[in-house]
Image 1 (cartoon, rainbow, N blue to C red):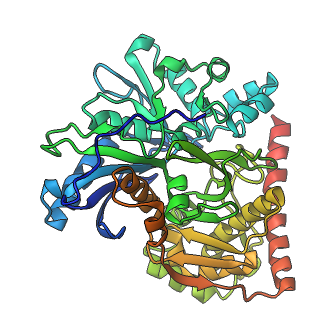
Image 2 (cartoon, rainbow, N blue to C red; image 1 turned 90 degrees about the vertical axis):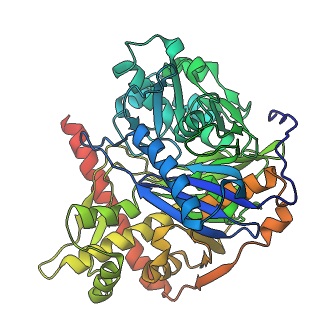
Length: 514
């Protein structure tokens, strides 16, 4: 059973100003948003942080830079809105999920850069555990596949390679939410929520506790880990005189994909959303009981609310929007998203070109951490417009694979996919997504659904809103219906599958050569 939440004293005076400040700490940037009593974002500010790629397949972030950015956007968004500090009644958090770090509790300094969820450096640890026959037991306890994507092997790597000089009692481990809460609370609170804990591969989703056996298999002492609470728990208070003179309650803590699920109001069994970010998460709500994942899906805790947990099934795509970043930053194929849209419209169609963006391996439904990206189907007339369109379409093909997997596992046909994230602004991508799915794709009026999900939960915790009121906040904006003929859909999907199979065959050949 989920832990009972102790009685809380942070309910707000009905006459107080009703602004929540929500932090969305994502893979590429940190955003601060002000959410008013009508559940609308009235102001926002973002600061990007540096991406570190020290080796092939390695991805890192500087946690100190991220924390400083959090403080900057908090100060900036309040100043931008012209608000007094007293207008802020609570602060909520949503975050990139599996990114892992370890820091010194005495100095507050991380022992190394954070290892990002995309990073594949711990593939060998995963292979060792598979060779020991532990994969099935790990999946049963955690709902997760044994893969470098998740936090446990990242912490193990940090302990092996960066943590040997300090005694264990000096070390604290966490995901990005834990790091930020610890710092913002004046280094008093080491905590996380159920959604983030469930992504670490050390948390038992049945017992709702850190698992001693898992910790021993991964070699990560439980004493390093944060206390786990519901997403609507009052975690404590901001205690940083550089930010606020008063103590502001911290609540509404949830991983970004689960935050978007709640923000999209996918709160009934069978409802699904797709968040198009650096990677893409396709998440389906499955109710109050665990549905055991198979075939490349993972079981997930959706959230802990009102004294109970709810569950979801998830298909994880490692690289979606990041493929477009690669085409811009590494290849220089476009500069602005307006230029991207103009370029793909010039292409007409992809001319038989497919781009499989396995830059950090393939996620659902394949889960091949060593697979590498490829462009397939080039001919002499192919140009940059075809390659850009193939990059854009690769997002929709991967989501289509994910949705088909969810339909197969649950027996629930998808009638509607609610979508969010930056790439949803591209109408060509959204139409192509609807065409492949043969289902309705719905873009809401609000774009920042992870942040809104966090804010909604925080508002419930602080007595601002009920679930019924929040359901009324959801507004549809654009809807896309499929216009593609069945035979054309089959032809295009067959080409995509052939391209993926070529990538997998290449991976197998390289593995065979040693």
